[in-house]
Image (cartoon, rainbow, N blue to C red):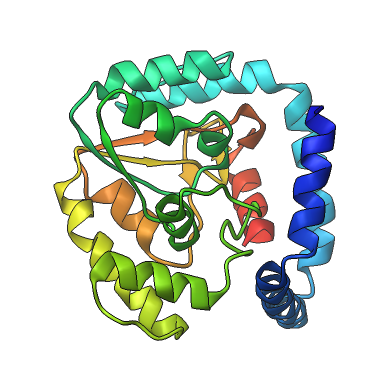
Length: 254
């Protein structure tokens, strides 16, 4: 059976899975409502998005220079910068920095997901905790993310309640506030015990080396600030020339 055939079968199976359909329909209604409300409050965002597109297109054409500039800025700020040309390069660099037998708290990073960073670090003998709620759910289910913004978009709250009930040994209702509080309690001590905190970045200003991290759960702040070492895995496409450009990108992203 070909890879395409396997993928097509997965898509068709998911399309006919009633649980996934329920979860997606709930999420789509929420997303659409949130987007409509945001654009009503900040109508200038549409025009700003056009400017951001131009900034990003120019930055991609100048990626090599911006990468070198960003590395110099990070080093000038007493950080360490590494350039990975391949996924294996990135895994090897981070693996050597971390070593084995460490506790790691990880904020959501699509680049990390793509190169299977958590799995690599676990194979080296480390304990890794995803701290984004959706990623935490996916990790505990032994599954894979379905959506770039909402990794567990396909998991209905009833399934999450069963999962968290198994983890805690308590019968939990399918109530979102209760489930969020449970995840927060499970992860809280890990932030302060961790040897390393990891994240991605929404955008990076090449001139200053500043990383912009946007969150809505508070986990990124803890994952990057509480452990003694913060490792950021950032794709080169996140680079823009100036701090002013980065603010514009981050506003549109938010």
